Image 1 (tube, rainbow, N blue to C red):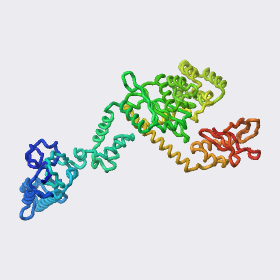
Image 2 (cartoon, one colour):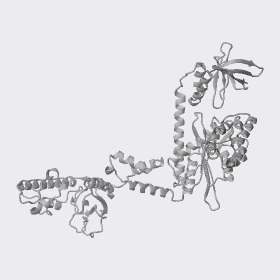
Image 3 (cartoon, rainbow, N blue to C red):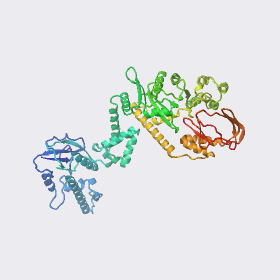
Image 4 (cartoon, rainbow, N blue to C red):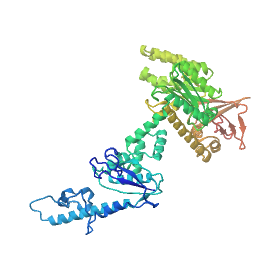
Length: 633
């Protein structure tokens, strides 16, 4: 048996512009408008295994060549050839070669000659293209479609697959039975081709690449701009912009088919199966709707065990379409860079919600409590911390206090209030300075705010927080920085699933930066710049670079000091120091070595260890009193 599959364009003699090689099929129901198609027929009377070009078609094709070897075109009247030739198909030889009828046409013979040449070239080009197609053989029908679709793109028309009649014994190769390159419609221009249906399709590998970029937080218009840049212009793009948007929308609808919250819980369960140490908990309301969601992966839990002395958390809005606050728990690593310990989505900001959130956070981290926390001034959050973390230092964000200062205080009083906020004194001195500030600046408008700030003075005044351990942080800018990074990819219209995916992308970038910092710390050493070369050299090896540069700045200041007197006691020493250029201004520095924290090095220096910072200090002698042996913490 033999199968012959044919291609036909839309100018095959039918009135409706459609074409098919199946004579029994009614016309007009095979095609969408202005689409070309191919159809197949069965021929079972050929014993040869390979296919040959249809003999009748070959005879018909030869009959179109006259005895002189010139090509003839049946649907063009030779008497009116000047008005019927399509200039766009004629080639460069016929441009400007036809003059309109006039009373003084002295080049009529030349025009007729040029017209004949153009027509002959067109016919020769059509015949060459015809036989170039007819000699093709294909092993699969998909190869046939791909070949003809490529030809259609070059010419400017669209195609679609028609129904195929197959023989029971399928052939191993496919030859074309007929091919016609005539069209009953206007061909599309090159810049219009991407909008034709058969040339506006997203292939499987392109789909996977687009979804990967979308999952990484890249906006869809940027993805399409990347495709256009790759192919050189939008006219050469394999699909147009709307196709990309529709495909992404359909994929999202498939993902959210079971509901946004259920899909989010499903993602958590999948990660739990992949990472046994992954932790998550959620609550639902009486109607079964998601109320609160908390999660942290194994890496975040390990990071908290190592660097969870200070925790910063703050809520932010407009991160999802439901208006549910997003609360990340962040801190500092040994490179003084932001790291995320956990994350949560809550339905409200009540005291009960924060109590659940803090208890869940402690549960996820084996009940390890931080040494201090930094939050904004939310009253419900403050009450929840007092219940759950009553023995932990709590500090309010200085940035939020600065913002409220500018809102409630007179601009002339801001400098004095900042002194209360940032400069540490004894409690007695603070009370005196506060009373003086109230007498000088209090008005009816700011009276309520000042009273509220005084009641919370232990949460923001440096005089009451000097004994706390905050790693130099005064605000929740670490949390705000993470939130701003998320806002680059999220908006109020996105579902929870998108927020979870983009949050994970931000975590990946933070951990990539941490890996780079670890590489720099292990493979490079900072440059020493002060006179205390031995101390700096030891510190460069003991510290990460971020902490070393902090110490280096303090060592530069130490060089401007000198020890005037030293008093030695049984358990401690007192150093009297002053600035070299102002010895009237003196300081008393009391130094008491802590048991178990002092260790002698080979060069006579001793080392003071701290969970984050350690430094080597030379043992001062009478001959070298310019070195100040005080710990840097």
